[in-house]
Structure formats: C-alpha cells, structure tokens
Image (cartoon, rainbow, N blue to C red; front, side):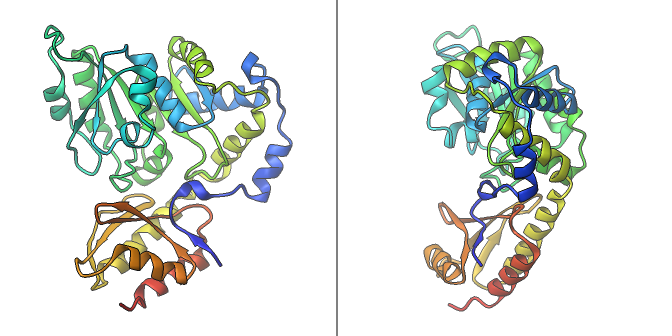
Length: 341
C-alpha cells in the first residue's frame, strides 16, 4: 500500500468520474462550442456571483493571465513573500507581464490591509514602479493551508479601491477554505476583480482551473489564454471532471481537514518534533528538533511506504487528499507514533 502525502495534486480520477467524463457532450472550445465547458464556466461563475468564467489547463496559466490583464510592463504587484505567483510559477510574472513583485512579510502567507497600504508606491514618484495589482492566495500553500477571514480581505479591497489597484485571488484551494470556514463563495466574488480556482487539487479532477471575473475582463482573457497556448479543443471531457467533482467531492473536504488535524496532534506529542504549525485545512507543516534529520525521517517513512515532502529551510509538509483513505490514515498515525531514531 503506497501512501503519497506529498500533495493533493497526485489524486487520480475515480471510476465514476471517468465514466462521467466518458459520457460528456463536447465541441471545439477554441470556438466556444463545447457545451460541457460552457456549463462548468457558467456554474462556477454563478457560485461566486461573478459574471463569467474561462477554463484553463492549469492554475499557473490562470494566475498569469490575470496578472497580464491587470498590469502593464514596468509595473509592480504586491503579494506575500510565500505567494505561489512569485515562488512556483517559473518567473512568469516577469516573463509574461514584465512586472516586478513587492513581497510582504505576512503571517502564514496572509497579508493585511495595513501592510498593503504601506507598500504602495507613490504614483507620482516615477523613479519607482507603478503599483497596480494586489494578489492574495487562499488557502496559502507555503503558509500551511491558512484561510483568510472575509473581513480582512474586505479591508484590503478598500485599500485597493482607494488607490486604484486591481485585486486578484489565487484560489487554487479556495474550496478548502469554503468548507473549513463555512464561507459563502459569493462573498469572495463581491471583493475580487478576478479569482482563479482549481479542480485538480482537493476536488480530485485530473486537470483544470478557471479564471472568474466580469464579462469584459474574461473576454480579454480569451485572447491572453490563446497567446499563452491555453486554447484547447474538445476539452469538455476535462470540464466534465470538474462538474463531477463539484457534485461529489466538495463537502468531503472536511474529511481531509479532520485527518490533517489528527496527524498534527500525533506530531505535537512526538519528542522529535520541534514545531507544528496551526492546521485549518488539508496542509500540515512541521519541523524537527535540531538533532534530527529531515531526510532521515523522509527515508524512514519511505521504508513504510509513506511519502511526505521537504519544503526546505527545515520545514516538512504533509497534504491529505481524496485518495488518502481512512485505512491509510490509521496506518500513518500508528507509524508516526512508532518512529524510532
């Protein structure tokens, strides 16, 4: 029994999801003639109370399109120092849009309105790049699955409005936040200019993300997606996986959150663990006491057919997901309790 807790991106479609995909009605989405894609775009836009959505092959491309839509070369965006758009998108911010990043030292990947306000460059001071966009990530990846409060996002929005800035949310794991915090997706749609959401992490689809916004912005996004190479043909087979995931895999995210918290509790009681960061959703980050080796722990777990990942700088990560079943969970809990150094 192989147990992969490296990421929630490793899930594979269930038989039922594959059957749903197999039976999808499709067309040429480059011509906007794929009925299943159109259905998914309309459904997710309606969920968040936004006017339109556009299907993308990846969350990275959706985020990069949003940055391109909201900025001009030479400008600057504000984000947390752990932001996915900065760390994990191949330098696309500079390559695709020609913009720089002002990185803030937030709390577990989350930034505040006060920090944003202090980081905005004076638009009349032409020696500095013009600040034009704020990006937040919800839930935070390197921040350990932390979730923003709606009120805190609203305060950042007020700063954006007062300073003529656009506001984008990288919502790759927004589904986890919605379940963990019992939030209404329309609350986010009322705050952000654009939102990206992902179907291939917690929801268990094999591929696919979406960018949400108003009709005019999403119409412009169609051209940007084309330029980035994201136009696909009979992609309804993949969109069908997203529909199935929304129908069957959304509420069950609470199980992933419970298991992550139970793993955290075992680690907190282990003498070889130095710190366990707070767990709100399905990401658990911890560090070992100084006399113990990260790589040795990873190897010990591999010998027990359990895979976890190192984030560097002494941080280890466990991510629970759809394919991590209760029998696996029991085994991992027992294995962690029996670790011998």
